[in-house]
Length: 188
Image 1 (cartoon, helix red, strand yellow):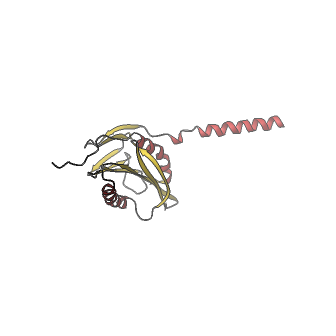
Image 2 (cartoon, rainbow, N blue to C red):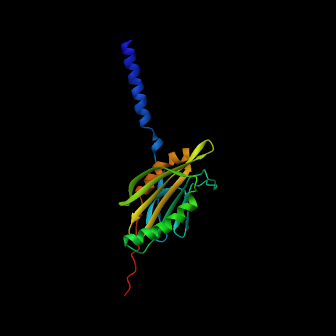
Image 3 (tube, rainbow, N blue to C red):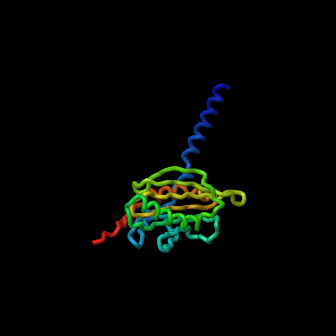
């Protein structure tokens, strides 16, 4: 009887370890993307559609139909033309608030806050959620603190899709590199 319990425990342990090694946390295959304005480059999911409108790059899956539930990623990059901290913060706030208000409605609530780094710059991370049908809409905002630039990443989708996509979103941020920070113009 004791040997049987030992074998059963060993089998359960092996199954638990095997479950930990599943590929559920794997990133989608990524390909290089370079901003046409030569501001940054990073990796985007293979075959995803890209659309650049002024300061906002929008990324969507190949079968994207425009519904709220579908995955979508935004990259907002805009110069502030200053390295003065107070001025930079004021300008960044004026740019970030309307951008976020346009893509994240008031029903979303922040459910987690943290810090990370993007291209070696400190960044604030906010996870947000709202009830949706039998599930939730989830997403993440990453606001990067860097001189001369306002840089914001937003990704969102319905719960199951977003949770499966999150490793890809993390990998995209890891591969982001600012190629040209716009320095303020010097007056003669």
